[in-house]
Length: 120
Image 1 (tube, one colour):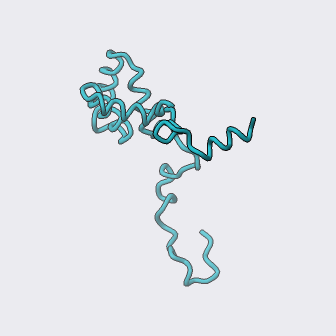
Image 2 (cartoon, rainbow, N blue to C red):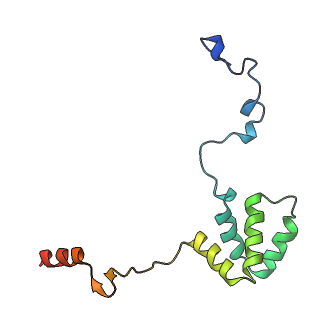
Image 3 (cartoon, rainbow, N blue to C red):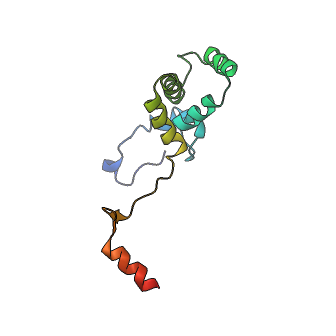
């Protein structure tokens, strides 16, 4: 480890700790899709029932990542709670496009009406 020019600035004089002791925790700067909730949710909802049951056996609670656990819990809850299913689906698949009414009480907004007339 290279020492700081000003020794007062060396906050870790022994050079221990951080990723030097645990290189497996070091990130290469790239996002891993496997660690995201939406990836796990999409993966689980595309399984058939038999695959899902097998996944539960192969991934007991102590072995699952938090993303897997949250996705699993979301699927379990969504089976019986329609508003929850809508919310989770909107967040993972994206909310459907919604049109916007650009009127004021059914009457055109004056500024927009002016822009339409000037284009003609």
